[in-house]
Every structure is written in C-alpha cells, then in structure tokens.
Length: 188
Image (cartoon, rainbow, N blue to C red):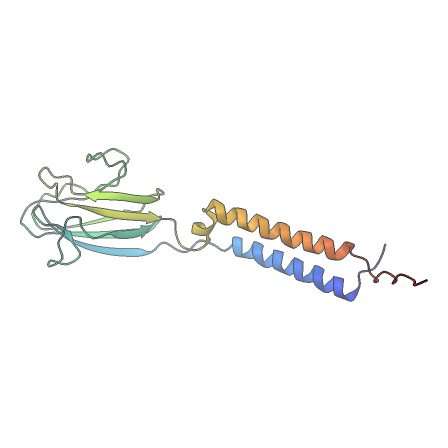
C-alpha cells in the first residue's frame, strides 16, 4: 500500500472536515417554538387592523411559523361579536380541520391561544360570524426557522448533492493523479 504524500493528506483531511461540518450543520436541533402575541381590531365595515386606526380590507398580512404558540387578542371595534379562523381551502366556511377560535359570548375582547399547525403556505384568515364578509386577510405559515426551510426546498437538496459529488470527484482526482510529472520527450 502506498503512503499518501503530504499534499494529499492535507486534501483528504480538508475533504473530511468539510463533510463532517456539513453533517453537523444538518443535525442542528430545531429552534424552540416562539410565543407570538397578535392583537387584531375588527369591524364589519372596515375589516381587520393591528391598531384601532389601521383597519382595512384585506386586513394586515400575518406571518407565523409551524409550532408557534400564538396568543390572539381580538378586539371588536364596532360593538359586534367577532371570531377568527384560518380558511385553509378558501371555501369561506369553517371546516373541522381548520384552526378556529371559539364563538365569543360577549361583544368585547376575546383572547385565544393556539399552536400553529404543520401546514405551510399562504391562507386566508376570516371572521366566521354572518355579515363579517369584509373581515379577512392573509396569513403565511412557514416552516420553523433554521434548516427546516432550507432542507424543505428540493433545489437546495439537489445542490447539496451536487456539491458533495464535486468534492468527492476532486478528492478522487487528486488521489489518482500521477505523483511525478512525466519525463519530457527526448529530442533527437
């Protein structure tokens, strides 16, 4: 068995270090769930708002991550009862699998806690009380921070495979290349 030269040992060590660091990066534990308070003011005629002076149709765009612990504080700005749900299939009806607050029994503030489900994308949130047609907005649910978002993208995964293959090909090429330059041709 041939011994590796000093240059090749460095190349092999560097390749192994890159692969080891790459595998450690993939094994990073997921970020802890965030506690996310959201205050929404609502009115049948003017929609939802983050403040009592910013009500609009559509309401403000909300962004949450899977696993977030959301405390939603709904404040009725028009004296009517309002509630809230995420309409995953945009059918304007509360389905059994959709995140939904309880129906309020009073015409004031409703505080409701929920954990964001494992369903990513941009959806519509609405009030489910009859006559609240103006009370809707968009909510974007993304995967929890860290590498979950990165590894969920097929192009990134393919890119990582290509980079790994390139590193392996360079290591094999360096190992197999001739150790000494060829002799120059003899002139006659």
